[in-house]
Length: 208
Length: 109
Image (cartoon, rainbow over all chains, first blue to last red; front, side, top):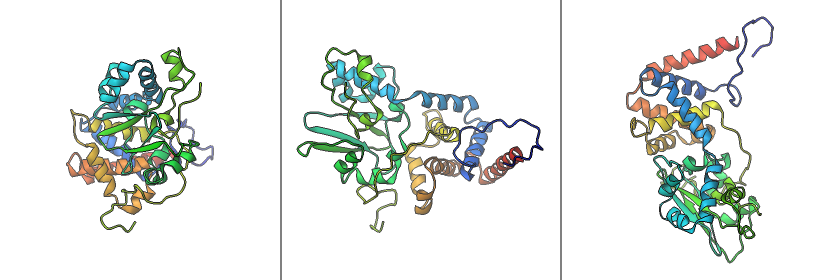
């Protein structure tokens, strides 16, 4: 963009995109416009879908985890049918089936999608970049302890580590263990200990 | 990756470097690509299923798979599926992309 001072119209700042517009950004605009013109989608539907995804965040998953820590019957339902249990809390998993895997005594779980980037996005939002990148996808199934170590998570040698490889239709989420020293805590307080990364399984919940 | 029968996307268990923990906030155009897939894959439209998205990404070729960013791969795949189903033609797409580029150049002049 030149700054010659010759243009007088106001520049509306571009939406937050990284770097100069690429060929594929032009493709997105072109495809979206064609779909709107042909009546396949409306501009309003696209806007609403962006807003809905913005509203999905790890806080939603934290609410589910905190409920499971507080209510053993809910936990049982969550482990039996994750999507149905989330629906009880008003969370729609969309077309995907949620499978919740619980950490236990000497058992740690971690999730990945080796083939692409499947992730419980309808529950906790879009995945972090590293989840979709080659290093994590390649290595976590072969050397999970080493990968967890890179996140600062040391799992004792006598613990079992289970790695769950997601598919397009089936998404895993880890139910961490409730931290010790949280007896009598409210669900809201408990949810504050639950991070995105501990629901992926690369870290443990925050300490109280 | 020289394993016979192993696609370049099928990287589970292969050696790789350390996990790079940097993250970026998704840009609006990336969120829109995501939104388009959510809409196009819903029961009402059923135009691009998630497995079709993945197949399209896996057919981009190893070079594109490694060089394109995540949502660049997605829009390339979504566009391919829509072209394949005749939702719009490659002529329409080409003309519209040229218009989009021309508008951008106009904005920046």
